[in-house]
Amino acid sequence: MPQHEYWKGQIRLSLVSFPVRLYPAVTESEKIRLHKYDKETGQRIHYQTVNEEGEVVEADDIVKGYEYEKGAFIPIEDEEIEKLRLESEHTIDLVQFADLSSIDPIYFDHPYYVSPDNKLAHEAYVTIRDALKKSRKVAIGQVVIANRERIVALKACSKGLILETLRYNYEVRKAEQYFEDIPSNAESEKDQMDLALELIERKSGDFDPTKFKDLYQEGLKEIIEAKMEKRAPRVKGEKKPTEKVISIMDALRKSLAQSKGGQASESKAESTPKKAASKKPAAKKKVTRKKQAA
Image (cartoon, rainbow, N blue to C red; front, side):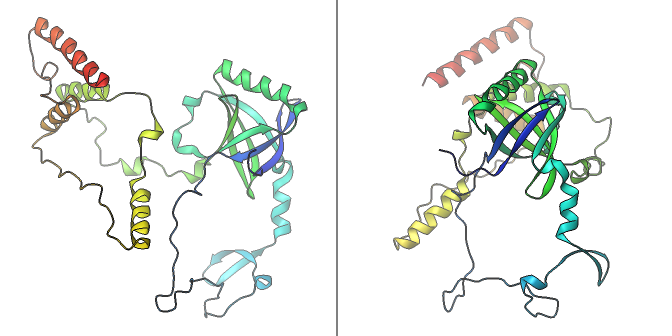
């Protein structure tokens, strides 16, 4: 059975509506978290709500507000905020459909699994799921989650649906200011591009998250276990020293050599007879297949 739902409401598309539950699709419960302690007594450090003079303020005496100038604020009551939430607090109103590729990944925030709330909702749920699959579209809407009105994208996922909250436009910093030093007419050299494309092709494959390890968390766990067992932590291995390269071409050639365990092909970087160029790619494929089969 899944954990208790994070949100409960309904999805509405025009005149079609059905009850659903949202469950967080990601978790951080497995992460090791460090706390702060008093070195002398070993007691856990806690924090209190204090004012600028250092005096403790009780919860009943704390109000929300907006500071419009230094030292002056306008109080905002919870009841005033509640009036802003309207119907979107309990309804995901689907108002648009879009290609997933049209949404810049920087706007995606947090994923939730969407489950039908009861058996009566299954028919509408499956219909929306299959329609999204066949149309290859995602549905866009808005809803209040965790006291915030969010844009959401609903898409098919395996046997069900997944909903991802999206950031608003004002939350995303404009990229132009970070790339302003890059000349607008800057282009890579053809030889460098050919080597880079060859390296990408050689290292391409389906993403498998199980192949990536959180080395920081694993190392932290080992340190904790070693201290509990009163031994020295086991070091898995030092990082290889980064080899200095003279140029981008040199770096790409060395990278290609490392990726296949030999010398990098020069067929794309240097002008060679067409017959020789046609034979070399075939040899590369054989080497790659041998490595995969090994």
